[in-house]
Length: 139
Image 1: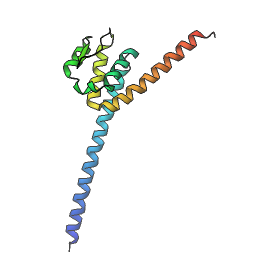
Image 2 (image 1 turned 45 degrees about the vertical axis):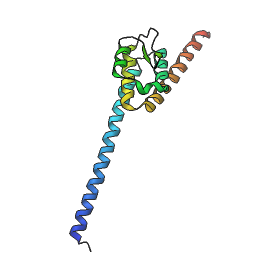
Image 3 (image 1 turned 90 degrees about the horizontal axis):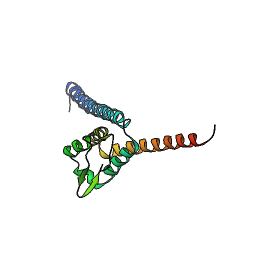
Image 4 (image 1 turned 30 degrees about the horizontal axis):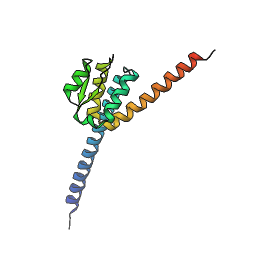
């Protein structure tokens, strides 16, 4: 049978372990939130065609082979080729921003970054469509 002192010590240790796990989870969530905030900062600088090309890359199987050297090439406004498929082969004016977004996506996770970029693309398309419609219609 466990004495009161042993029981209290065991309960205290279990509480400390549980709170340690919770602290780690909160720290991971805060890190994830910081990464998302940084991703959003870079995403705001993207133009639609660059965003679409980044999404095309992330949606492809080739994204698993994306390297730091590829990111460097994109940042220098060069096209990259992965397994014979070219990405960013057109003149992109936001190469550094695209490379930064892809780097954050590597850290954050491709699925979460893809979902975020897809939402941004929808907003940009809607905004651009609204702007074009309002310009075309007489006031």
